[in-house]
Amino acid sequence: RYGSNALILILAFVGIVFVANYLAFNNPKDLADMTEDKQNTLSPEMVTALQNLPAKLSATGYFSPQTPRDTAQQLLGNMKTNSQGNFDFHFVDPVANPLDAKNAGVTGDGKIVLEMNGRKEIAGYADESELLRAMNRLLNPEARTVYFLTGHGERDINGSGQTGMSRALETLQNKNYTVKTLNLVAENRVPDDARTVIIAGPMQPLTPNEVGLLNNYVLHGGSLVVMADPLPLTDLGDQPDPLTESLGRVWGIRLRNDFVVDTTSTTIQNAIGSVYNRSHPITNAVTLLTIFPLARSIEISTQPSEGISLTSLVETDPNSQAWGETDFSALKQSGASVALDPATDTPGPLTLAAAGENATTGGRVAVFGNSIFASDDGFDAYGNGDLFVNAVDWAAGNDAAVDITIHPPTQRTFLPPGGLKWLAILLGSVCILPGIVLGAGIAAWVSRKRRG
Image (tube, rainbow, N blue to C red):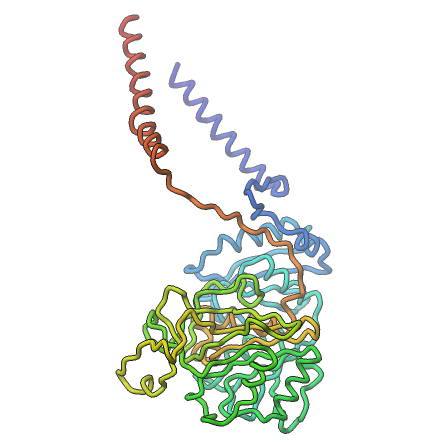
């Protein structure tokens, strides 16, 4: 009799679980988000956008087996549930299907391609705000032209290796940017369609006239992405550098004449960026380290001009042994040892990238003390490519396309119990609870013994 009852209870339990899962799978809208901070609930902006799609929207997630897709699966599933049948998705392994990834313009792992009416946009990571920005670009197509400055030995967008930026060019084009080059000596003006001007590692100084043209462009709402290498890597020598002087004077962003040494790196000349400003669009979603080979440090003014706000975007780890070295001769000598000299060097943590925005004019600048990180040799290393593209997006104004309600995760801190609490837990788990179970067993045994 007891065995039959147990079997019936087990079958009933299994049946209830099966029916509950079946109903949940077929009625996902009736599910309740029980997380404290509603991390499994889409924002109102995303739900509105999905329910007002003018055409079918599809998403393809390019995730290799080495990249977890659980977050993307859940997010895209929620989007499908709320799309009224206008959204669908699937996943592709870019390692097993490299041709599919190449045809889609995907050059990394964990990317999501959105497609509507034959047009595509790439979301760099599985994040609701990133997907909503990509959707917004699909729904509101417009010309987005960026210019790479030429004429001073800058990195070649069509070249390869350390001197080329073909990977950056390819990625920007895959994000629907029109990429052109600009020679200010020949043009004597910044084109009207320029969303931003990128200055990638000039070897020769810009002329005062060129800097004046760029300043005027930014004064009227334009933007710059400046990547300036340490002076020994350029042909500037002791010549004045109107560009960096202007950045310091106008914006309060000063590029130091030093060389970042980071002893935590396998190569001390490779500065490691590990501390990111989470309140800025350029770095709020960068999760991987960034590597800056042969970089110079940046100093940010504590009292910038009126209307200008400055942000330190990327810094070295405050616990690492990193500093700004000014003895360039020691670094050039093979096997030479270097050490921090407090009298001449700048101790860490050091700023490797900074941004400035003028609230009055709308002008923006993003400044990096290195250009190799965005070259073909560095673009695909860790978070380098994402950082560069994020900077271009922000400078071009594409960060403000969507104002999304983010669900900030609740911070939970575990504090180990101490003193009497720890003793109570120990006694309760080791002595009291086992003692109760043992006592109940003995009592039951004695009771049966008396009855029998």
